[in-house]
Image 1 (tube, helix red, strand yellow):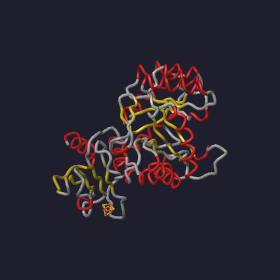
Image 2 (cartoon, rainbow, N blue to C red; image 1 turned 90 degrees about the vertical axis):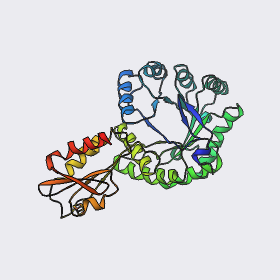
Image 3 (cartoon, helix red, strand yellow; image 1 turned 30 degrees about the vertical axis):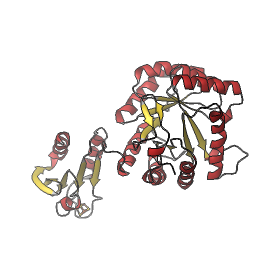
Image 4 (spheres, rainbow, N blue to C red; image 1 turned 135 degrees about the vertical axis):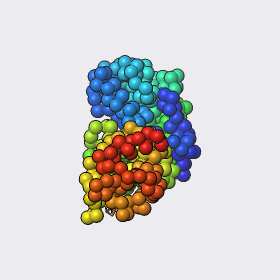
Amino acid sequence: MKKRTETRPIKVGDIQIGGQNKVIIQSMTNTKTKDVEATVQQILRLEEVGCEIIRVAVLDLEDAKAIKEIKKHIHIPLVSDIHFNPDFAIEAIKSGTDKIRLNPGNIENEEKIKEIVTLCKERHVPIRIGINAGSLNKKYEHSEESMIASAKDHLRILEALDFHDVALSFKSSDPIECIKAYRLAAETFPYPLHLGVTEAGGLLNSSIKSSVALGNLLLDGIGDTIRISISDDPIEEVKVAKKLLRVCGLRNDVPNLISCPTCGRIQYNMLPIVKQMEDYLEKVNKNVTVAIMGCPVNGPQEAKRADVGVAGGKDSAILFKKGQIVTTIPQDKIMETLIKEIEEF
Ligand code: SF4
C-alpha cells in the first residue's frame, strides 16, 4: 500500500501534492467562472480561511478564458474542472490553469488528447482523473473494483503518451464505499490520491460522512489532498477540512477548542461564548488548545490539557492554564481575556 509519503509527487503551481505528510486542503467555487469578480472574491475569502488549492468549473470557452484574469488576483493554485470537451481544457491550459481535472477516456478525439498532454508537459500542468461511483461507464457493474478498473482505462491513455503527472480520486456518496475504493487505489497506483466523499449533503451530514471516510483513510496514511464536499458556502468546506486534519494529527497550525456539553451544574450563559470563540478561532493559525467550561468544580480538571481556559461560576469565572488556576475574572471579560491570552501564546 502506498502511503502519502510514498506517492509520486506532483506540483500544482508552487504546491506539492504527494510524497510528503502534508495533506493539502482544496475547495471549489460555486460562482460562474466567467463572472471574474464574483469568482475572485470567493477565492480570496477561501484563501483567508486556509484554502490551499481552488477548483473552478469550466463549462465553455468563456470560462476557460476567464482563468487568465482570475489568476492575476488570487494567490493559490487554480484547477480547472472539465468534462468531455477537450477545447475547454486546451484553452484553460493556455489561460494558465495550474492543473486540470479531466477523464481522458471521455474524449474521443485522440489528436486532441495528444494536444492536451503536450501542453500539460510543456507547462507542467498535472491532470486529475476523477472517478465517481455514480457515473461509471455502463460497461462496469457498481463496485470498488470497477472504480479501479475505470481509472486504469483513463490512465492507460495518459501513460501511453508517457504522461505521469497525475492525481486520482475515487469518490462515492457512500463513505464506506469511499474507504474501500481508496484503500484499493493505494494498493494499486503510485499516484497521489485526492480524497473526498461526493454529494455528501449539508454541513452536518457531510461533516459526519467526510470525517468517517477521510478520517479512516488519513489515519491509515492514505490521502495527499482533501476536499470536503458540502451543500453550503464553500468556506465551510475549508473549515471542516482544517478541523479534520487537526483531529487526525496532520496539522498543528489550527487551534483546538475544548468545551463541555453543560449540565445542571452550569451557572452562567456559556453557549454564546463558545460560539464567539469558535468564530474567533477560525482565523487563528496557532497550535493552541482553548477550553471553555461550565463550572469551576470540574472544569479546570477536565480541561487540564488546555493551554488556556475559563470555567464560569455564579458571578465570575476562573482563568486557568494547563489545569492550574491563574486568576478570577468578571464574566463580561471572558472573551477579551481569552483573546489576549491566545494572542500572547
Ligand atoms: S464542566 Fe461543569 S457544567 Fe460542564 S459538563 Fe462538566 S460538570 Fe457540567
